[in-house]
Image 1 (cartoon, rainbow, N blue to C red):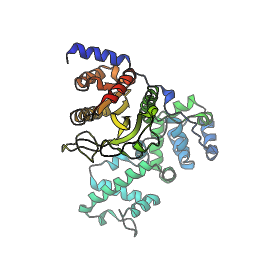
Image 2: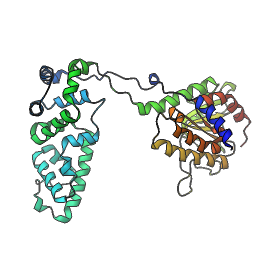
Image 3: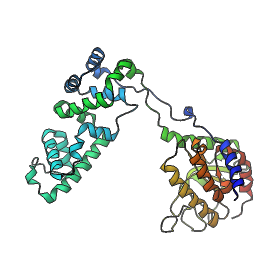
Image 4: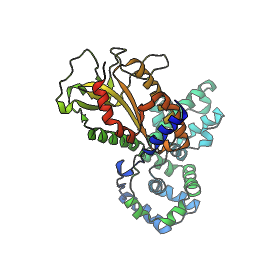
Length: 394
């Protein structure tokens, strides 16, 4: 394919690119935080307005639940797992390359933290008889002890046990001081408090929408709408789509009425003609087909004729690179081995308007040709695709 033709195809493709409509994604909802248990802490925060390190440390000792308020005031959602681990533990000591120092720090925490000790006993990291001394853990055993301890700490941080953090705040001055320094020095708590009224803010705060899932749902929603506009019926409860895998040969096909001869299913596998009994897929490292569930399967008279993967990219990232390799392999495999079936990659978003997106397009289009589309170009071609589906031969 010559560069002039690639330029023409890119210009047409990019002129049809969609921008993500936030109204079409997940709607935001009220935080719904019950502020009654935090009345005393809120009174202190609103009366004080600004904290010194020692004052905030004392507040966290007397009202450890105040941490929950600060988290919601300072974060869009919650503190991350990494931040949570930092709140709970001294990472300088946990990250030390001196295994003896790490062991001693962990054992000290086990003596001071009943909940942590119970978790370690439950996971059989230590015996129920009590916390061992550093000398009781032999040198050759320390590596395994620290490994299991870090695994448990990672699990606990991911699960975000607020009650446990509250207990650590109320019983450990070092934890309180570390959290107070972080909130004041790193998260600029005093500056934030100058600009908000905590009660009013938390009462009216809304949960952050799940933009990651919104991208996927946005593309699927648009594609479903465009298919219906072009006369495709959603299969729903029709027998042909009740199974996870749609058969291509060797089965009695469902007789459909004329107004439902063009249908579509979502999230289905398709039986491979080249490899009977297995599903069409991208190739694995061993050269064997892998099971593939397609976002959309278009059927004509109950026979699968087009399989579609769809996604939406607003920025560049590792995901586009993974999909690029998978879908290129998938496209080649189907084109070479699956007569009567076509693979289309429907991808959209302003990533494709960037210089990186253009390079990706120029790299892919010689292989994909007219099977690399966005919502706009697919809409243009849907009636032509219907015609090709009705004329395809197995």
